Length: 124
Image 1 (cartoon, rainbow, N blue to C red):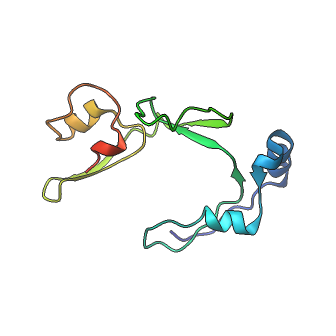
Image 2: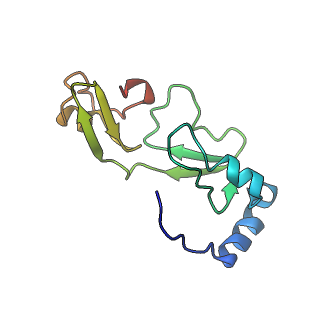
């Protein structure tokens, strides 16, 4: 996760600030918070944060977390639909957010044949 980052276009920052107001931030602390996770990778803060952004694969959530009950911006991830790897020995699959169960089945998971989107509870 290294390389040269392109500068964040000031016109884009201005447009996002105009559209989202207080829900848009380029603040260092907020960007730092959104730039780390539990992985071993070093922090990589985004250029900006917009609240709330709602990732949407195909609408298979059982928890309702993709519903914009307070407004927000939906990001369609359905075209991120590649099975990146299956490790039968470890019982793990690495997939992108928009992978359908049928794609997972085709890649080797004999239990998922109904064509629905893989939910996080089914990725092992």
